[in-house]
Image (spheres, one colour):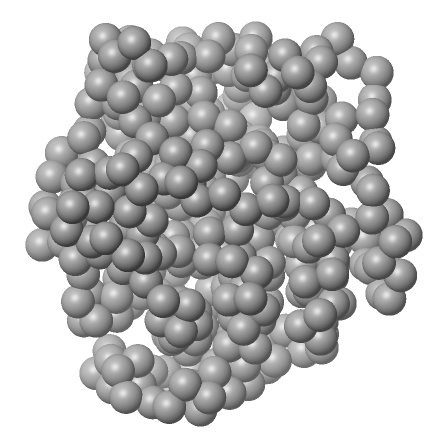
Length: 375
């Protein structure tokens, strides 16, 4: 820990009052100290959802359906494996799998999903199940969250997404997700995961009913747990997308790109112990993503071959490898394809066309067709 670590009070002052260019410059200097050079990493992944049935009723979510809804679904383990195999054939190295709190799905289903993924897409990294899902599985199965985490670990899972964090302040969570896990429970699952050996991301969804103080408190809670466990490898913020969610009646417009850049910058300055800050360009748009790379972010997130949650919120962004390479190059950086755990796979120096058609043309022999996986 640096002796000049940013205090919550100073962080709030900077976040509220520092000129945009000065805040970006300070965060960029810290990024350069931690990751010198021009490399900006990204991962080719896919983010299907195994079910949209959920009993949590979060007011910010446009994706979920209540049990019994005719639009509700739950994919079989075989369908999920087929989906992963199709994405792997298109170049994906990671599957990020999350879903709703479906009362019909228990621990055996989740273990079957893991086995189906390992069989259908051998070698693909399994980045599975957020803390709130772990809590749901534990409650459904009458086990502790530690028991569930250990069983998933023994099945082959090594990293966990940081979804469900929203804002780690209970006064906010009671307003936007009153049935969902509270702050200490989310952090508790993360602590247990890190103790088992998982590496995880941490996230934040802002731009709804939170205050500036809540954003700072969220970041400081992440920093405190990282001091204790060292298990977070990246932080990823994104803004709330109103869509057709109940919360859209209160918050009708997404947060501005300028605010997103400030969040990225203050996150880099506070999270002095988290290695990577990810620019969620998919959620914020490529221009905001480019600015974020000059405001402390060193990673450009995933080239998502499938994504459903933001799509349901009427937020659509085309994702192609050549576009991502061009965006990163256009911001003055060198794209580097990575794994989930930030192992370098390929650097793209100056030739944008060297693998520009990678995601469209790389087709491998597989028993599952892309069409079957997407439907």
